[in-house]
Each structure stands twice: as structure tokens, then as C-alpha cells.
Length: 299
Image (cartoon, rainbow, N blue to C red; front, side):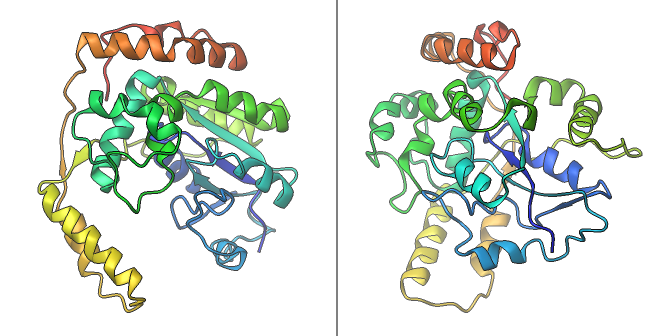
């Protein structure tokens, strides 16, 4: 086994799923078969042990694979993940996914509703709870949800402070930024720039299909019942898996287009995110002022 040395970190709803899939198609890259293993983030650890984590990379061949990677979207937000990665893989490289918070925040809110973690139906109402959730209050969210700070949208969707903390501990030449705008408008060119960062040749045609599109539950009440049943099963220590609950959740899905945000809500977001967007632009050397215009698509 070759230890992981490539980490796609953050941010949620920024194209991580798509990029990880494309990278996995390169013959010189081996990617974790499990999406978002989240081992190195101590406050949000989904893979319980280093043994289970390294088992994800048993198929990595040192003679074939130049890069062994995984993609865990909350590593950028985590206070512990990047330093733990560096302790484990001192020469690791990082790919950081970025997106305008005016589109990222409502997209994340919808994803968290879909996952059953967010109980507040209207995005504006959930956004207003950011301060309370950032301070640790588990308000308007499922009781078994991970850290409430994840859905404190003003905080978790502000990427400037997160990138500044990253660059405090990782040399700039080992970090590559991917902006969602570029991934959407020129996926092939953006992907090839990632390969250049990894010192790998471009590969033949791959399908740059959009993944992780907008979706919601057809029957939200049914999904909450399924989540409660799953929680009871865990508390009772029932380890036998019949996959019935997961099949119900997969069936209870419908894809759709998101409704545009109101002008007033967009203005509130522009005001709340302005300082952090300016910081992020200065850190990555790019003018991001267009992110602060109202009337954007929130796809």
C-alpha cells in the first residue's frame, strides 16, 4: 500500500465530487473508493481508526500510482484536519475547492435538508441562525447532527479565513485552488490545470458530466422517520444490515431546479460575506468582486 499523499479539501458544494471522479480516472492516481472518509478531522470523524482508513488504499500500487488521494470536504473547515494530515503525510499536496458564498450557502442548506440534518425549511431563516449555531447551539437541526458550526452558513461558507489558516501551515506551492466558476465553464481546462499541478500528463477524453445536482426528498416526513429508525438501530447496537433503510432513502429523491433568492436576502448575504470574499481574493491573487453582485444564479 502507498500512503495517501493527495487531499482534496473543501469546500462542500464546490464540485468536489466531480473532481474526485475525474481524478480517479487517471492511471497514475488511486482514489479512495469511499467518498469523504473524513478520518483526519477529529471533530467530525467518519472513519473510526487508522486501520480502517488505510484499508481504503490497499489497492494503491507504489509502482503504478504517483498519487494516492481522498476528498473530504470538511477538512478545510476543521481545526485539526490539515495538521493531522501533515503529521501523517508531511509532503502531501492539497487541492482546495472554492465557490461564491452567495451560491454555496443556499446549496449547502438544501443539501443539509436533504441529508436530514437541517430542520429549517426556508434558507433565510436558517441563515439568521448562523451566529447561534457558530457558538455551539444545536438550534433548528437534527439532534444527532455533527457540529452545529457546519450549518452556521455565514461562518462555514466564508472561505477566506479557512484558506488563510491553511496557508499558515502549508507552503503555497503545495496548494492548488479550483474555483467553481472555472469548473463549470471550462471543466476540461480546469481539470488539466490540476494535472499540471500534480505533474501528470493529460489523459484522453473523459466525460465531464455534472455530478451532485440539486435534489430534495419527495416525502420529508418519511425521511425523518427513516433517520430515527436508523438512530434507534445504532443505539441498540444492531449491526446486521438489511439495507432497507438506505434503499428507502435512495428512492425518496427528486431532482429539481432551485428557486432564485430574493433581492433582500442576497443583499444581506453580500453584506455578511463581503469582507471574507475580499480576503480570499487577496490570498489566491484573483479578483472575486463579481461574487458580491446580486442577481447571481444559485445553482
